[in-house]
Amino acid sequence: MIRIKNVLCPVDFSPISRRALDYSIKLARHYEARLHLLHVIAPVVPSLYVDSTRVEEAIKKQVDREMPKLVESARHSGVDVESIVRSGEIEMEIQVAARARKADIIVVGKHARPAVERWFIGSTTDRLLRRSATPLLVIGEGKRSTPPNIRRIIVTTDFSEGTEDAFAYGLSLGQEAHASLVFLVFLHVMRPTPVAIIPPLLPTVLEPQQSADQVRQELENRVPADAREGCSVETRVEAGEPYREILNVVQQTRADLVVMNIHGKGGLERALLGSTAERVIRGAPCPVIAIPPGKTRRMSA
Image 1 (tube, rainbow, N blue to C red):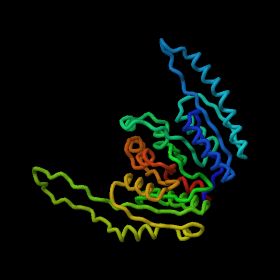
Image 2 (tube, helix red, strand yellow; image 1 turned 90 degrees about the vertical axis):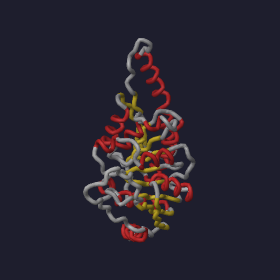
Image 3 (cartoon, helix red, strand yellow; image 1 turned 120 degrees about the vertical axis):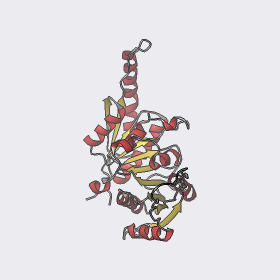
Image 4 (tube, rainbow, N blue to C red; image 1 turned 60 degrees about the horizontal axis):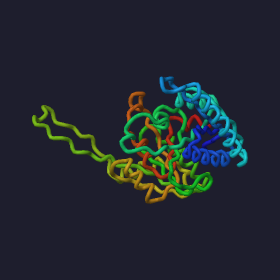
């Protein structure tokens, strides 16, 4: 069973940040965890047209005014809470705070961005998704149930490294909430390859593709034996573009939460845009938990 003892919630006092805080409060109360509210004051770059000193003073006044309100809101809900204010690069300070507070999960808000802008690096949430060693719970603008009223959870996998982590996390959350669990896996669809003008000298060898029945059997074998204790379980095999199919299933089932693992990629690969996790987070109407490899094994025990 997953143990959540420390919840870290970075706040910037925006409406989406407030939604993340509300979710964090309910999560912390449900698990009787401590809530750590973090605000990071990013450096103000001096310029000819900007008085950096006045800007920093205004920011600090806002922090002094707004942070006590958030702390009081959490305490009023019966949650043990502390506030942290740091200065520095936002993503780095979040990771430092997560390590220092031994955070079991980081809850962040997802700001809606134009389609073109989505393809460019710049979002703190995007950078955390690529680099964080702590599970990341991303809250969007859609309306879905919060703990302990989560009723439908989608757990996705492609049988890559970290599958067991996602399964264990989703199962624990599902059993805690007595929710319906859908374990979702995808068939690898062979894409047509361009025909070369000059035939290759050696024959091309294609790896055999698993059939739907084989994939379904492997999925059933990987679902923990105790998965059906306290919650209903469904296994589904879909074919197609993974992120599109995940979003389709989320819409069909009106899921309250998606749990997925982040592949054990190297630094360069995790720095690239376009992963399934990023696309699901951008398009999902419900919160998404992204779990880095090996995290569940470190948290459980």
